[in-house]
Length: 217
Image 1 (tube, one colour):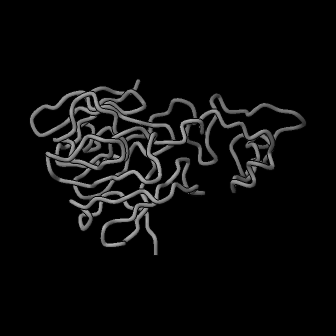
Image 2: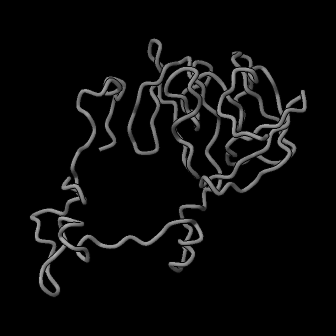
Image 3: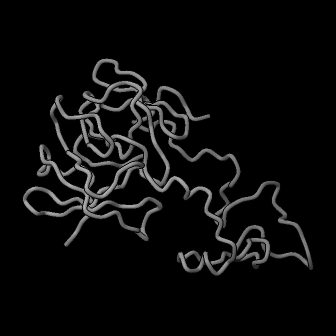
């Protein structure tokens, strides 16, 4: 069975060849099918500029080439390089910067950490022993996609959602009233009463707060 690969340790130090770039209904980016020297095939997220026939490598070595599609340790990626599919914790696989057109940048290296500027503008510390892939995620034009009609949203599996205002009071805090009435609440809320605009839900004591150098706002 073919699988999406982020960073699998059994494939480190192995080079592969791109044999196809395919559409994936489960993500905004395209995926590239890589065939390794042992004839095993795996999928990776396809970056901008990757083409069929090109070679890519997953490596832990300093000598590995800084080339689009190559997966390297952050300690061996020069400052200023555009990267994607970044590990947050060593060995967990790529977790952030994976959507179409997105990329992060290695700003600096200090001690055991790299300063990574994320697409949101946030600057975050990531261990130098984590992996990242060189380049920007492909399918950049995804952001300019115009669906054009409600039906096309349904093709993507996205169903319409009733407004809280149109519901009964038992179903939503905005519901009820005679005729065309307002929401009634001082501020818009969720069906469970939590504020929906500007309300911070992040735990202020979250362990990863110390790794955020600069907030996105």
